[in-house]
Length: 180
Image 1: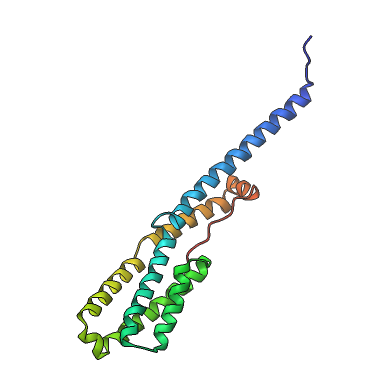
Image 2 (image 1 turned 45 degrees about the vertical axis):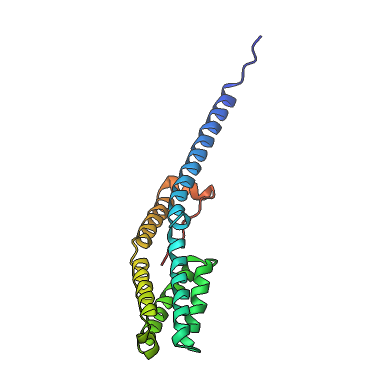
């Protein structure tokens, strides 16, 4: 003899399975989409690496500047900001502020270096500073910043403005932090 479930119980089980499948599929899909965006942030040669490289360039400029501008306040400020940026343990918002401050200090220290006689007499330091400046421009004009922000904004839009995205948000998928 076969055991038969009542029709109501079968319907409840079917609805529960459909809801579970919908929830699991939505959560998994949005989690995967978020991983693709965060790969642009923290993956190899991602946004965080570019910010760290900027910090390293600032520290390298400090080494050159110490030979020609000993005890300079701007060099010390550049070193402090570069170390914070190179460490990478701040939020994106804080790193953005550090990058803006670093950009100002980097230009200021370069200008001060160019005004010293000892720097103008050192071909090696001039070439190295020119290489650092070129690398700095390449890093700051990198399309990676815009690419990451576009991908993060698109993901956040899908997460907050679509019904399926709202469901994913309820299930624990979080928006991506923007670099602005």
